[in-house]
Image (cartoon, rainbow, N blue to C red; front, side, top):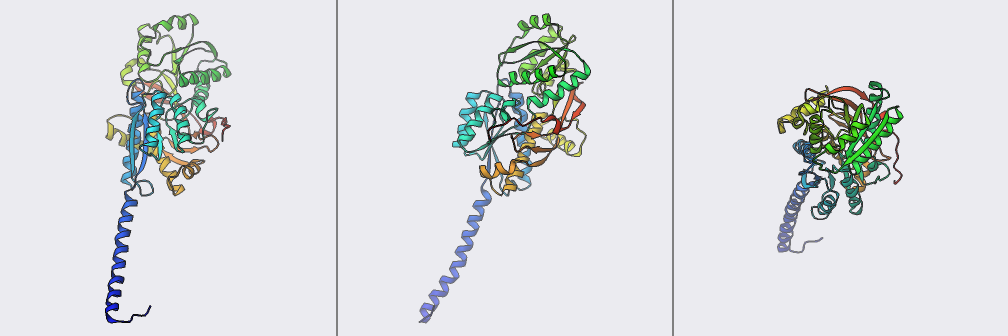
Length: 402
């Protein structure tokens, strides 16, 4: 461009001096906006009613992970914001609040579901909203089996994985033992009983009866006559949360704890109800993907941090929920995006570190592979009796939907 006069030259110089300043201001504002953008994670978990103790561990685990991740700079430079909703362990409530988290709060990712029926229902909501969810608690095999969804992941062991390990251990302890089953009358309770019963019978244990009580049941004594008349050696339970406290208390009142080996699903006795159970929990055996007694540097650090934050030991649900957020961080950073499609692809086959050790997210069904432990309650703590390698425990992929 040719400048024809001194006046025009001054005007041109002034404008060209302003442009870099304007661009600098725009860059600063835009950069601040990007840096301020947060990743929203919805936590839809029972904060009241029967499963509130489990929901509390979920909340603590997620909150601790978020605090540590944010202190380290967040996920791909973005801070994590947690938005909590109380699912009440009720599928109808959970689906309503999942819609709110996806539509109104616009969460990038959702977790926290405990009730297996709620997880299955919320998975359908996630598909409709093109969002991803993960459970750290629900154990129904259907979630990563016949009812699997490309938008649903699970980091904890399902009922079949637990059943396989527990039945193998039990067959070695009491070969030919007679087993009676009691569970809550909904998806998780029935699926856990069915999974264990199948494995028990494959291991030459004899099933002598089963019963299912309503969720939130207050009186289990009407079932005790049937149990006694069946003459079992072993009582398997998938009753969970506060219901377990009542069940074990009433078993003790009727002098049945001394006569039976009581075993069950990992949801039955946890760090959140074990104190309320007192001596009634003694000698209970289960299979878990975690124990605070794990003697590794990573777990010792995790237990110390958890205790400092909440004056309580973590249990399986606290540990799995803590590990989940680190999985999400690894997936988003691997993908270079928080979009559903990119994160889904990054999650499939991803290996990540947790307090329990290394886990692998199986691409075929979105079920995590991890080592499991047979644990027994001694002196109010879970003591590790045996271990099962993750590649053996996980079993076959039965998902046919993707």
